[in-house]
Image (cartoon, rainbow, N blue to C red):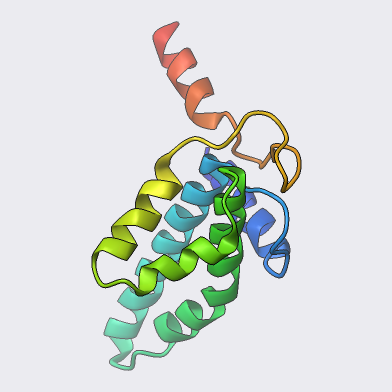
Length: 134
């Protein structure tokens, strides 16, 4: 499972300058989970050495890939990437974008293309099926 999460992380990084197409919920959320785990490790290292260097560099390095996967996630629900600008509305804008990230994308092809398949697509449903059969 951990291998698939980091495969997804690398998958998103390889597509980091691709702002067209779609990203499903699992691709989006597992990318941010892996980024948070890596970031936590870097912040522990930074605390140990007393200089906020590695975490800051990682945060800056993830800026474009995060923006790219977020825009592709908006595309999955048939919304333009310009909807991300709603984050500029204090407090409510962030919650609005968060709500858009949680809703399922369209199953059929939309104006942004076919439904995407990431290395972790269907992983949660596969996990729940395997635990139910035990």
